[in-house]
Image 1 (cartoon, rainbow, N blue to C red):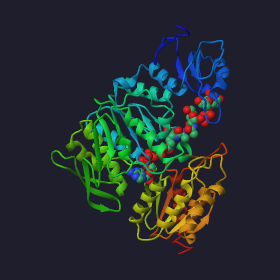
Image 2: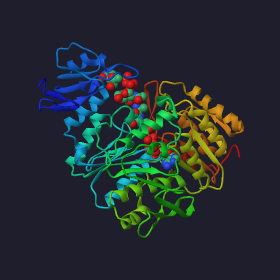
Image 3: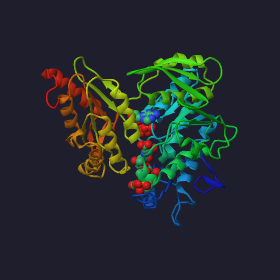
Image 4: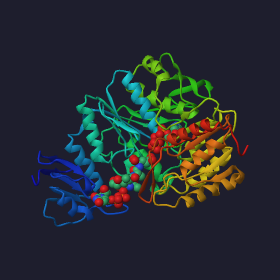
Length: 491
Ligand SMILES: CC(=O)N[C@H]1[C@@H](OP(=O)(O)OP(=O)(O)OC[C@H]2O[C@@H](n3ccc(=O)[nH]c3=O)[C@H](O)[C@@H]2O)O[C@H](CO)[C@@H](O)[C@@H]1O[C@H](C)C(=O)N[C@@H](C)C(=O)N[C@H](CCC(=O)O)C(=O)O
Ligand SMILES: Nc1ncnc2c1ncn2[C@@H]1O[C@H](COP(=O)(O)OP(=O)(O)OP(=O)(O)O)[C@@H](O)[C@H]1O
């Protein structure tokens, strides 16, 4: 057993000598295995020496290398990282019922709600989401939506140590493509929806859908199965060739069908018919039709996991809001300010349609687009903004390594194809943009700030700037109250 590792086929055995697995040399500690990944920006093989200097006792990589420590050459480093991480943590997912939630929009909401439903049903469940990771008695802020495999397996192990029997995991398309979730034996997988996103990474919609589909293809025939959105056209593609049981949900079609009995600006009364027993009837206190879809996905999955309809019906009115999603900031006599995480054309459409119903006045939209991500969606989001908002103020999101004015320009191109007059201002300083709009809006108006939700930082060429949309909006509202403003400016 060289350096405490043996490999037979895909199965790695690690002795107690091994103290951890890392794919980033900067995280290596004495006794670690370092897995060198050829990346898009740099090549992990270039950091092997660094890893050895930090105490790595074995290296795994894809290139032929001659090293002073044992070296394992593999076909896919990412796959090996997942295998090694699972082995190091004694395959925690084998002892957990694991539920993967994927889709373009709504993953975090479904993960939060499904976790709440199963916990209410007496099940001890951990949760991995893009906002927080909750392993049962420890909650950490998330860095990635789906953690890299060493961190993911560690969190699953911690859940098991904390007595969890179930794990609800948000699965991004990056997480699937980069094989972070490879060694998880899924029991149930849920698809929220698929619309345009991440084409910078996946190239085409076809590749994007095929990547999402991989999560479902891994479900065995004896698993709890796949939960698919019958109203989303890509579900048929995802369904092709699946060997597991499939249950569909939707508002227009599906095995589990939801009817909106009454919709108000702030929520919906719904009837969910799963085709057996009395339908569930409850008040969902979150706005928008899209949240009814998220609810139906979570309920369908909860039923598949054995949570009773009675428990589900009782819990629906109490389902928690996800931080930074449709977060409403209100002060009497002031405009309604809403912080939302919409960052795709479909998300922005849903968000604007929903907000439109909440206020009598105009809808002001403050947004930008993240740098280094799908450029093609920018004009599309500009078109959505100009179609559904009354007044648009473009600003910086997190530009990363791009120039904020060039990003704003790309969005403006979309706005111009619909109605250039809707673009009231370009203010690239996001805090100033929010302050300006809150000052200009009338008391009956709504200011919708999208794209960053609860994120605490903006990144400009690696420089980190602290900025939380809700904090800035509250400041702006406070200032308006102090100054006694009553909506001056463009009316
Ligand atoms: C764009 C993208 O997918 N980037 C991912 C990709 O990075 P990369 O190919 O650029 O890697 P690289 O920087 O070239 O480095 C190659 C390897 O060298 C290693 N390295 C690098 C420097 C060093 O000093 N030592 C060292 O060992 C790196 O850790 C890496 O393993 O491979 C890395 C290793 O797996 C990932 O950590 C990294 O995710 C970055 C952090 C990221 O921001 N990813 C985002 C896009 C992401 O995954 N997002 C999804 C959610 C998307 C959504 O729905 O919004 C998520 O699940 O979070
Ligand atoms: N089912 C849905 N359909 C369309 N848009 C949605 C849906 N659910 C949520 N949204 C929009 O997407 C935003 C993000 O929601 P949520 O965080 O639940 O999705 P997500 O898929 O987890 O996104 P991310 O992984 O980027 O966090 C919301 O603020 C809302 O604007």
